[in-house]
Length: 430
Image (cartoon, rainbow, N blue to C red; front, side):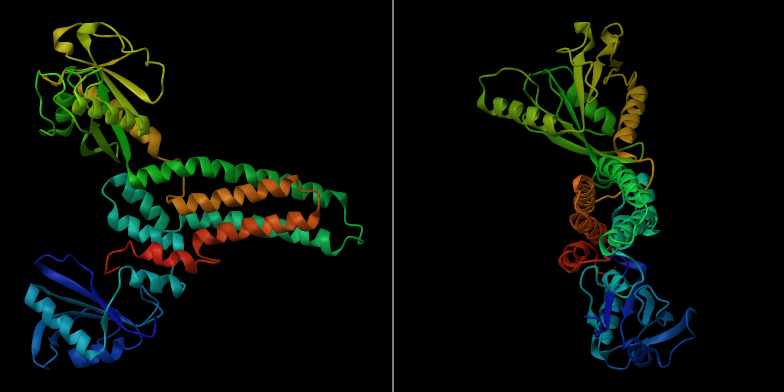
């Protein structure tokens, strides 16, 4: 793959003042020379005339020559900063192809950076997450991953595993050398400590995944308690139809919000009640199913009822909200609001933001994808098995399995089968 020279538009596909074309591969210098006359000084933006495929001027823009290995991909590379009109982009792209470059596949630039040792697989995924980040918390998490915070933590675990494996191999290879009994005791103690750390990381990894993918908050309650009005108030726009007629909301309606820097999908569900209407009954069934899979249930009830609904106030995944507080007194153990007058709405938003941060914001570097969590869980299980095995040879094999599982996360070991999946999610210019 890396024998070819690739190009792609690194900026958006819409018309703009400036567009950036990236080029990378072994023929980058020849292609750039053919299009701009000669190579500009390395890493210095130079204003040049850029020729089209017919040799006539296609545009005039800034050109950067980025010789490897000090480039994003580790290869010889270049950037063309041209005018962002469609005709200019087409002419320069055609010139690049005529000169020998081909259009890059999604994620191919970052894939080459990984293959050339410019970043590990975790850092490469951080690039994709940073491009896709929609909230400030997502941006911070992706940037930490891109800058190697998770990789450094994994490297520390891998180094400790290598040391344990070395001790274990010594016990296997030199059984007659009268090694101190403290060697095996120390090995088992350090093994137990490392296993506890990995188990904790597995538990905390779900937070990183939730922040990356977003949380789901389901708004539930009986008909006519103001669920749809509350969703509209939180969204600051009309998402759901509001009516005094019970059963107006039949299907789940969703709206994306940012709460405490965390992306949250707020789901307005059908009113929960027994009904003979088959369509409304299906809506109630879907509402219950959506609530069962939600990260938080916002249980809304009419403040005029004077109390909590169905005795769910003690559940940590449920937030009780007493609506229509403008028509009644406050209700204990509930967040009191009025969707009609916005009374208490700021307090509710703060409570929701606090809940979102508690559910999704980790305390330190965490793993963010299902494949990370699976591999980390495999490593922890291998360490648990090693603890329970009295035979040194079998214990050593479990330690090797744990090493391989950690290596799959960063791409150090056995990643061929996951590369296509990882990089296919990238945009073309990355």
